[in-house]
Amino acid sequence: FEKPWRLDGLFLETVYIDNKVDNLILFFPNSQFTSRPENISSARIRGWEISFSLIADQLRLAGNYTHLETEDTGPIPFYRGNELPGRPTNDIALFVDYTLERWKLSYELHRIGSNFLDPANRQRVPAREIHNAAANLKPFGRALSLTVEGRNLADKRIGDVNGFPLPGRSFFATLSYQP
Image (cartoon, rainbow, N blue to C red; front, side, top):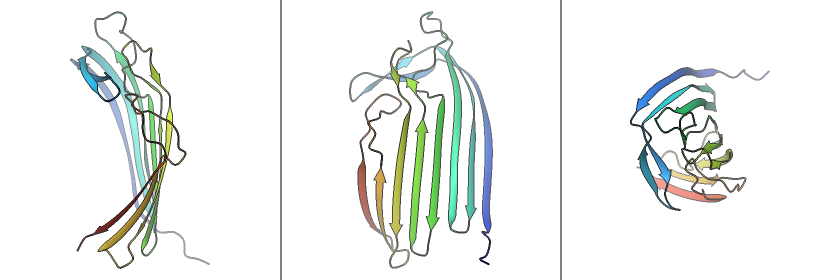
């Protein structure tokens, strides 16, 4: 029989959010490369977040889930009751690392729900999912490190919470030395 996995660490945290905010400043897209700040007067933000991590031998699993319900409570009738721009209702992130003697393999999944770009709730950024992976090698101990990383592996054409386009599939290699 092989030895069972040994649990080295466990973390679980839950946070409840309930904010009434006056003079809230939000950033709205102004052009392809800039955003402008705007005071929306007041808002209500409620929700919760769960974070966890588990470490068992060479495996680390971590993640978090955030659920937010936002509402513009300002005096402008056309905006009052609308969702706040740039605030997705659901946001999930999962991370898995597997470490061998000189290798570390990593995977990340980010699932961000749709959100609005404007206070009138007319322009919506669709939900997006991003897959990232990396491999790190330390061939001579801790001093020298080589990391090869792939981001947005599914090559999805997606935008961030402000609607600005994010890069498609990208690959990076990093060689570092720390004496």
